[in-house]
Image (cartoon, rainbow, N blue to C red; front, side, top):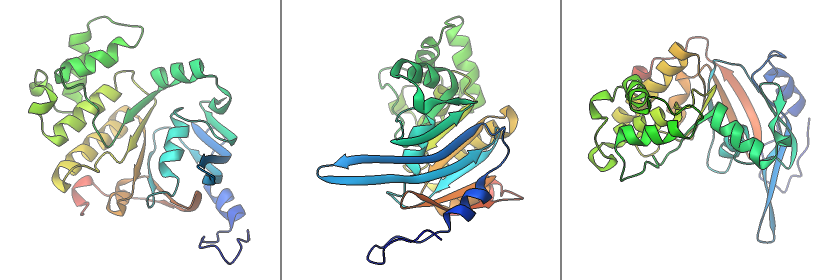
Length: 263
């Protein structure tokens, strides 16, 4: 048992038992090995992650669950190449992206990762289709942008709203445009940071249903960060974090349908 001084408020976990229970196959798509992330906040050293070990397989729908400050968004940012660990390895598709230089990380994000954030971050002066076209144009293949943008909007159920501007769309519709945009590079991994945080329950259900359908139909690996425990039952696995450490992992043998989620 790893001991933490009694004067702290940290929860004590059996780190070796947790580490072994989380290890899946050697062919896991994503492996985090002894990942530590520290940064200075004024004169204070913040320990965002404390020796994280985690493996995620291709095609999984995984929820990273925990309160604010537990390290879930930091974990997502490391997998997405938006940040790098202080120590440890972040291995995606067999390559340790923790060793990548800035230009390699840019190429990695552009080719392999899709991002969906709590705030939609759509360009307000562009239509839904044009927002998706903009993302498509960032890739090497710039052919048939309008047709491909319409096809992506069709996948998220927004083909008929393609020519509307963000201000003319509901929050749920804007988030679905953001999902279509995230799919522009046909990513192996879709990273979602509180994607329903600004949505009511009905609209949130619609967005989650789109993500689940993409996961099931396309085989896209989805990693979703949330503080909302009500979302957890729809996931294949739920990783609970606390104070930069993994508290436990739950496997849902029969994930709930989105329609059954209540919050």
